[in-house]
Image 1: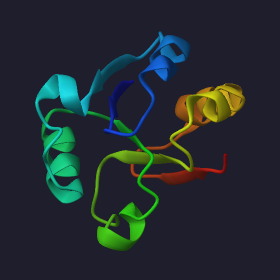
Image 2 (image 1 turned 135 degrees about the horizontal axis):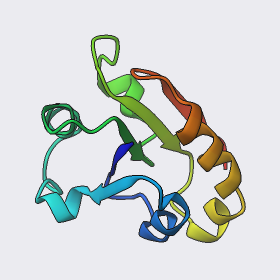
Image 3 (image 1 turned 180 degrees about the vertical axis):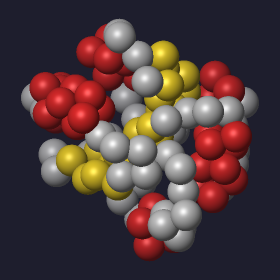
Length: 105
């Protein structure tokens, strides 16, 4: 899968998703885009999953028409996310295109 990490997503998570192609919004030069623009750019560039820590995303964006899966990590703390890495891996490996999943951390 082709995955995009939003700004708050801890980059060390990348090591646990090695079988996927991962880029960050920063690496793509998209760190200053609004959420809507970021999702649009990700879809235009064939990303299948956006991983973000922005828990307000579902209230700010109409996600019904989107063709990208969105995974919300409910924390920006890498030590806390590290404890849930197996759950993150399971969700990433089973998520359907267009799904929205929140991982409580």
